[in-house]
Length: 487
Image (cartoon, rainbow, N blue to C red):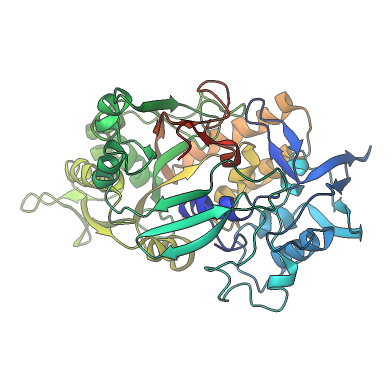
C-alpha cells in the first residue's frame, strides 16, 4: 500500500481508497484533465511551466492540513534514486523541478514541451509528517498506513482473507455515503462468483463462462464495456534469450497461435484480437500494423529456416543436438484465465515442434522474475492501457523501467520522444502509429486481445455513472456510491 512502490492493479485498488488527492483527475465522460485536489492550474505560454493552486479544504485523515509541502516531499522521493519508484524515468526525462513557493502553490518546470505534461504533473501525495523519517522502500507504514487522504481508510487487513476500509470523515469531497468498504481476498474465481450469487459480496469481475447467468440474476446490475484504458492480454518473449532473439522464431511462435479460437475458449468471445499496445478505443490506436495470421505450416518453415529441425523420434525440434524447449511463467497460480492461455499456448506450440514447460508462481515472485531477474523465456500477463499513449513508453523504450522483454529499437525511442513535443493530437497520432508498426514488426510480444470488461454489481448499490456514460469504467468515485437498502 505504498503508492511509490506499487505497480500492479491489485495493490493500486487498495491504494486508491486510502490515498486519493491527486492534483488532477481524468474526467470519466470526456477523458479531459480536470482539477481535483487543485482548485486551478495555469500553463505558461511557452508550455514549460505549470502552476497549481491547492484547495483550502484538503486534510489528512488525522486532521492535519494537506499542503504543497506534502506534494513536494512526494515528488522528491519519486526522483530519489534510492527509492524503488518504477515510473521515475517517465518523469525525469521531461521535468526539471517542482517548487512549493507557499503552502497552496506548486510550480512544475519542464525541460521542453511535453504534450501530456498536465496529466503527469497531476500527482498524488503521501503524508510528509508520516514518511519523512522512514525508508520508503521498507517501513511498517507501507502495508499498514495510519494516515490517508482518500474516501476510505484501512481498518484491518488479514493477509489472504480481506482488507476492511472505513469511511474517512476528513475526505475533502465529503464523508462517503458508505460506512465501510470490504475487499475480500478470494483466490478462486469460482468461489468469488458463488459469493456474489449468494449476495455475500456486492461486486464481482465476472468470468466469461458465468456472464449469461450473472447478467440475468434478479438482483444483478450487469456492466459490460470496452474502454479507452481497456486491459489486454499478451505473451511476452524474452529477447535476451539467443533463441528468441531470432525474429524468425518469434514470428513462428506468433503464427502458431490461433488467437481467435483462444478468445472463444478463454473469453467466450468477450474480447477483440489485438496486434499492438493500444486499445481500439484509444485515439492513438493504429489498425494497420503487421498481423501474423494463424498458419502452423508457415511457422514450421520459419523454424526450418532458423535451423530448428523436427526430430522424428520425439516430435520436438532440435538444432546442434539441443531440443527447442522453452518455459512459460504466469502468476498468480489462481489466475484461471492465464493458466488456460498457457495451456493452450503449450499445445499449439507443440504442434509446430516447440516444447513448453508451464510454471505458475506467486505474483510477487512473478513480478521479480519479469522486472528484475529477467529469468524467463515466455510469460503470460496483461496490462491496463493508459489514457495517454505516452503511458506505455516505459514498456518499449530501450531503458524503460518496465521493458521486461529487453526490446531495443532506436527509432521507437526517437519517435516516443518526438511524439510528446507536439500538442496537436492528430499530429501526435502519426508518431504513435509508426511506433505501433515498428513494435508489431519486431514481435517482442504476441499481442493476444483486449478484454471486454464484464462486471456485475448488486442493484442495491447506486453508481454515479450509468453504463455507456463514460469512456472509462463506470465503476469510479466510490465516495459517491450509496445503498438503496441503507445497509
